[in-house]
Image (cartoon, rainbow, N blue to C red):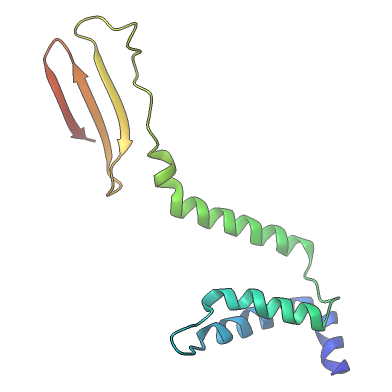
Length: 129
């Protein structure tokens, strides 16, 4: 056991990839319809960290992991973030009869839409761009 602990502590990149691989394998185990999935990597990492506490990866890998996490969250939820309600382009107090007011947003399917209203033309409608 001491030889394995020494190996894990002297080779932090090997420990990192071994943790990911073992966590993936453990996450695939299904017991009565329950599996840990990718969360198993966390538990395997905790177990290996308890077994070989000096096996920490270089700090640059922690920064890279954080950046990849933020990138993934941005890609997955960016469209929803940009679909927040937008203030009309012309304030209600400053409008003159016939001014066109438009609001831009993304619909549920991710298509860019513009809602326009013009009091002079009586037009009120949705159009896509």
